[in-house]
Image 1 (tube, helix red, strand yellow):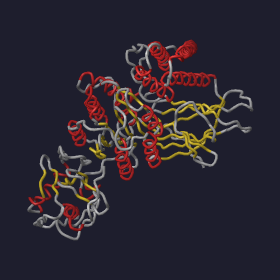
Image 2: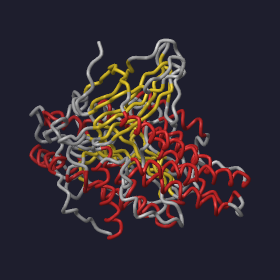
Image 3: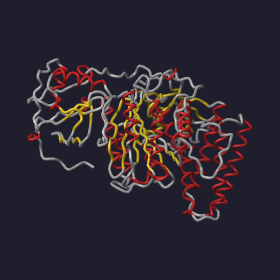
Image 4: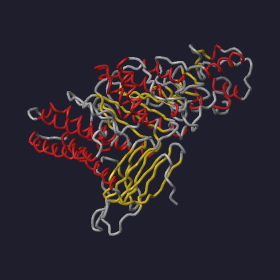
Length: 610
């Protein structure tokens, strides 16, 4: 039995007026995200390229500064993960709760991030899959958004575009409610790879070229995530259906194909036209699937296809014009010779006349119309300066045009700036971005320009208070952190923690033998070895301090704890289940695998995982 759509999402479907029965049925879908009184609990995952080239033009520092700014918009109900990759990938921050303690930890960690080495994106995607799996298990209600930033081509590990895209397909099959936004720094990155990866992961493809661009894109991504009302909206249409846009499609049932429209954001509108295969029996309903963030419920429903009104007809015409201009931009970006320039300029002039005609019938100041006019102007400018230049000198312009085509076609992402082309003052705002995303993006840019955080006194964030969907667990060892039964042998902090949670801590605490689990507890500023603990009272005091104080960070760490009680491992340990904790890794007690009783009980060490 189909269920109704969630209240925060409104979807309408329309057929063309007076369509002859022998003509192809074209369904126009309009998806609107409503206004919400809360915000979406979010897990923000950043895959950050830290290869040596990121040192160029302060690229890495620009990214770090922007991450620091957008982190301020995360609350106690949000979590943050940082995965850096160069020769290999490292989980630097693993699902860190963004309370005051977590934010301070992340800020210090970002300040310690450095660049070196090559680019191994495959390793980063492996670590990403591990994080998504862990978060889905522990926090299934969180919206998981991934931001991938790289400035070049993959040159280590898996380098084939198809192989890397298949890795994204695999984790999207396992985690269909996640999304990935791909960001290329500069114009010398693999456009095809980032475009295909983000398409498969129902995300967006963006380009940044300077500090302002980084701030704008990072802010837009963060603002969109926390204003998300629906995850992975899919339209189920008859097989053979075609669309104008580059969206992921897959066969899901014997006669149906699923078209992924991505996430739905508050106070935004998404439109798409479906060209159905010719059939003697017209479709009267269209089936949709979406996950409602606020109610944490999956919806599978069919909506009735209506006859379009004059107003909907104009919206369809605007959508089709958008697609025509996006096609022009795509052809400019894929230009293979200068002989096509006169024909492309003629196309641009024809499309410009159509835009001017729409401006007469609609309000001329409508943001989308101003963006269409600007896109045509930039395409013509780039074509003119391509006339006498060899193709290899036009790579930058062609990359920008490819990104603009994706942005305009899908109506998502952040429009990249074109080198040497002045943006019209009439383009006052992004017509596709949610209001909160515009606020965060604009604030990030202002902060980047002034080198300090700047509040917007005109912005009222009261209605963005997180709803009671995900609450911070109490920092009480006995109730908040599940502990396994004590090991057979005495000694080791794990057993001590378990006994403390049960109120059975012995006094005095037996000394820890040298060949057993060598650890220390993070306190406010120092690490203390278990061998220095001589009484139950001292242990209780230290454990309470570790449970409530800020986790200690160390320059040697590849990971940091997700807040709360944690064990700091002073040397490499290999667990019987094959997991490895590298030297200097800290992890929360709740996520540690069972500990070995003695090092002598361990199997031979496996080869290091890279």
